[in-house]
Every structure is written in structure tokens, then in C-alpha cells.
Amino acid sequence: MLRFPKTVFAACGLALMLPGAAVAQQAAPEAPKAAEEEEFLLDEAPAAPAEVTPEITAILEQMDQVIKALDAGAERTGNSWQFTLQERTMLVVTDTNAGRMRIITPIAMVEDLPDGAMQRLMQANFDTALDARYAVAQNLVWGAFIHPLDTLTQRDFAAGILQTHAIGETFGTTFSSGAISYGGGDSSAIYEEQLKALLEDIERNAST
Image (cartoon, rainbow, N blue to C red; front, side, top):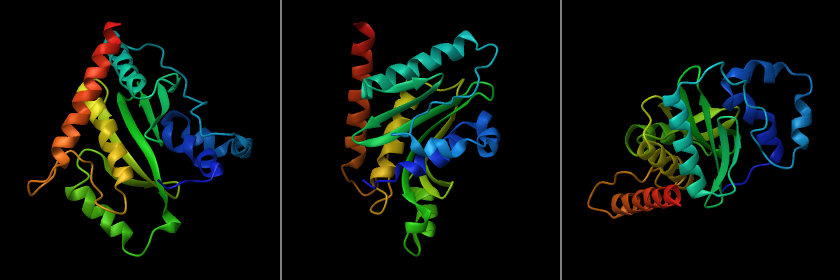
């Protein structure tokens, strides 16, 4: 897995991921202090809306259950999370005002990409990345999964995490989300087993 300087996360992470605070983050005079943080943490979530419907609250709690099943040490700040899945940093950000959520993972510095890499990412977005896609922001390549909050099911969310993780891990090789494979390969069955096991873990945790 590619590693990144902590200053990269501190300098660009919050402005990218927190839509309500993006402009203020860019203009804040004390922004350089963030580079001194030991880790990239979601410690400046946007202000909570005045009211969140019971339906959205229930969806947020289901999301929390999925994340905690993957990483018991996951950190939640408001309605945003940071956690680790097989040594890869994963982030989940929601905007209850806009009714959207996104799962993202940092993959590579744009300046380090070889010639032709951007075209390859666009090709992957067309056929192998599927619901999770490659994206570029703040001079970083990200894996991203975006979905409306009000129609998000627990299975959708779990699948989104696995797909986003997969396109990060397969960057530079198959550029695949793992959800579908063609030609009779094994990847699709492996993905389905991973998703089934995760959903079973969530159900067991909910019953204890």
C-alpha cells in the first residue's frame, strides 16, 4: 500500500471531505497548524443541522454498526468516521443537509503517477471500478463511493466500503472494485463471500 506524508493529509483532507467547511478551511489563517497533527483525523466536522429526521438517524446508526464491525477502533466525529481496513485508511463523510454520503480512501499523489495513468483511471471508471470510482482532488488520487443518504441500505453501505477499499488496493494492477469479474474468474465469488461475512458480523454484533 502506498504511504503518504502526514502533512499531505493534514493540509488537504478536511477541505476535501467536509463540504460545509471547505471554504472556511481554505481561508483559515491557522490551517498550517494542522500539519503538526500526528495523524489524519476528522476533528473538525461541520456543524450539525438543526434537525435530522428519525429515518436519517437510523441510517447513520446502521452505518456506524457496519464501520464498527470492520474496525472496533474506528473514530466518529459527528456524522463522519475514520477507520482502518486491512491497513488502508478509510473515511466516511455525510452531509445530512444535502442528504448525501461518501466513502473515500487516499491512493496516490498525482505528481507520482506515470504517463498514461490518468487515461487508465478513466478506462477503469468505465468498466471495472463500478460503483466506487477513481477521483482526483487536492493533488491526490482517491477511491470514492457516493450515495444518497435516504435510500442507503446497510448492504449498499457495506458493499460501498468493500468496493472503495478494493479499487485502492488494485490501483496499478487490475483497477477493480472486485464486485464483478468477466470470463469465469473467481473475483466475483470472493467479493460476495466477503460481503456475506461482513453482514453476518454486523448481525451478530447487533444481537449481543
